[in-house]
Amino acid sequence: MSDGEVKLSAGLPRGEQTNGLSSLAGEMASMPEGMHVAVIVFDTKSIKIDTDTGDAVPTARIRRVEPIVASADRQRLLSLVTRAFEQRTGKTVLPLELEDELRAAFDGGRQDPKSE
Image (cartoon, rainbow, N blue to C red):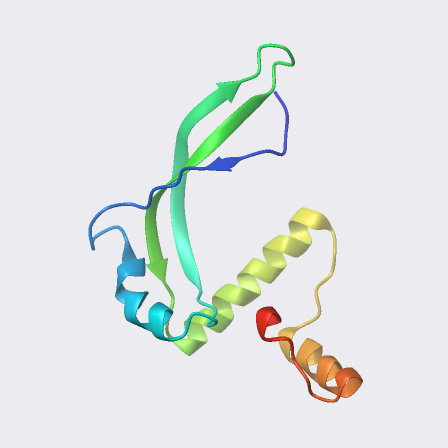
């Protein structure tokens, strides 16, 4: 079994009870450049085995998705994501506020809209 590759099932869960993204449809359409934060719950839909190598490639299925819209909750979740990234990769990420200050200091305040 190999580590690394995971595919994602193309479908989202059906119905308001499990797919909270539908509550953001209007905002996403009117501000497509905006970034959103959500929590997903997923399981394994299937596993494809490469018979030559024995590698197993799981396909994740999203079972539930909930947008996080409250500012304090978003900040807390982003902190948790940063901590998880650091633990998984061993790479340290600057706090968002410090990163913004450094970006402003070095590029005169210009920000790439895609990076926000």
